[in-house]
Length: 218
Image (cartoon, rainbow, N blue to C red):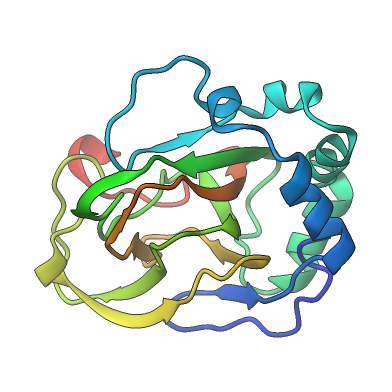
């Protein structure tokens, strides 16, 4: 599905694809029409302004049939084969197995102009990360390269330690996917909105860490 139209892997600042109009229009519109309500994703959790919340993959079995089809495909072996086909030559050969997640998610309304997350690296166990934008409502994706390696928190990076290389406009029905490494610095631009920002998080977890970075070897 989401990788069917992948035609080019951008190598800088790290391997990634950007696919606009990723799904057929009728299919996409039906996903929007039947998407889980914010309260179904939040599930009673307390939350703050501009906070990211994902619905765990195991809860997608209770969604509308078209969502079950969509989520099932993106945790299937066929999808993993597509990932390997698209990113051929970039994936570390020592990886033996990949656990897949497909998680409908959102960012909560943002009461002030803020970033949900600044420059950072993802968990070293992640092989790939994909973001499917549905009703973005602000917050474009920024890709960076290192100027100086420095961390705070776990894998958060100070703004002055990175150089922005690319900004991806998060239009509806756009899919962005990248391979995770110690170079895969990314973040989200500022937003202020009374609305939820809707997206789907699609992740593949490796059977071993891909790099060591941050504090305490995380």
